[in-house]
Image (cartoon, rainbow, N blue to C red; front, side, top):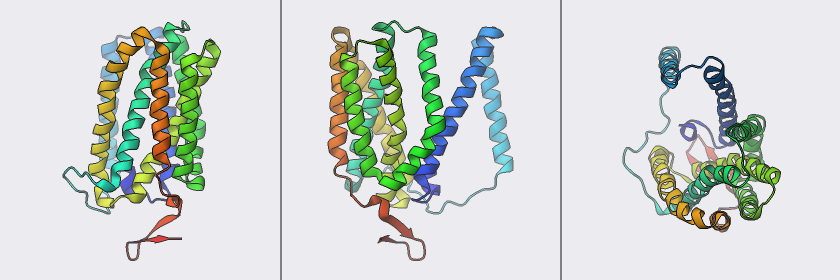
Length: 275
């Protein structure tokens, strides 16, 4: 929806702002849920019930309070697969694979190898949310300044270093630092979506979002299972495989056009103009 509504100039900082808002919300709700569980000893089913009722009330409020906005470009209602989007598909798949290694195995590493407690892992989550709160919107603005290609190259070089470091880290504090740095790079992944927005036919955005969601979850289904067997024998190999995914992403990012940040849309004649 954001890519449909936002202009190419607006998209990176606004998507960053949305990540920041999401992080603030998560931070706020972590505190509320902790209070309901630890202080008020509320049962899980009541927490879910309260959350569900709040969602229903918010939905009703939005339906009543906000006008209906016409979509600028009517979206295709069938699955769209195009050769022109193949690089985007590759970046999405590799991103999903790396994310699963981070979400599943980086947390395992903290607990199994370094003995982090649930509260300490939660603290790492909170630090990550605080970082996104302060910096996600700024990262979005940097994408406008430097362009998608340079930002993704920077992200993937950093991820190669981070995953390789995961494989050999022996200090619990350094591991925590790697975890935070790893999460920091998530905001730069905005550049994948803004890259797609700039190359795509506006009518393809909704359909391709469905395709990318599927591609991402192909990795989500298979990567944890397959690497789970590897994890039993060697933690290091799992993260070296993550480094390989990051390296493949780095190679793919070099195929992005150099002048994406200079593409604008002339609304008067709907032609792409290069400055």
